[in-house]
Image 1 (cartoon, rainbow, N blue to C red):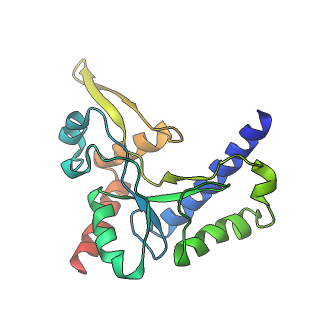
Image 2 (cartoon, rainbow, N blue to C red):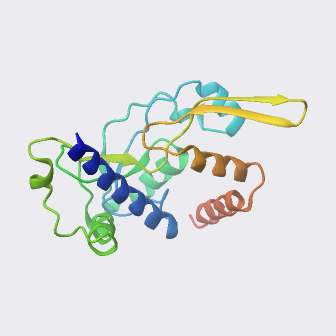
Image 3 (cartoon, rainbow, N blue to C red):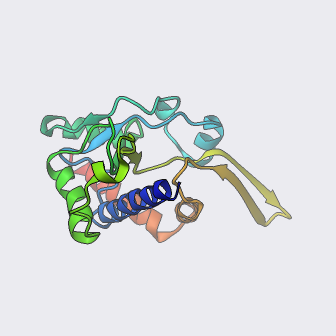
Length: 199
């Protein structure tokens, strides 16, 4: 049991470092060669969330399967699908498993995180996990479910929501506060507009 907990902690650390690296270079929602992308999971209370936060309706009720590796000639199509919410980029939860592995540029970034930034280059996963299929991938972006809001006394805003395993409520709240007028959200939207104008 302690061993499984330790493996999960290492996997989470790798994913979080990978996600921070992608965010630092503006690549959380920008597909690069070799990225593993897939359809996001089904959302609950989708209509409520879409009305309040603008989630595109085309992303509702998609199975979290059909992962594909981004080829050079598919990048523009996949980037449009990721920006529209129909696909999501995934990051590594290293181990032994049946999920597709990143390739090319995406693999280089993942290996840099594991080998250079975290110093895990010499880790032999087959010895660590044995015959357990513990390797997997996690979505870089998670959408909240069952979002509900209520205003009390005309000034206090109460928000309730649920998130997939491995997600952090504090991250969602920081994005939400930004969407209500914060500079981080405005900068993000400006970057997306610049990218769209280049096409």
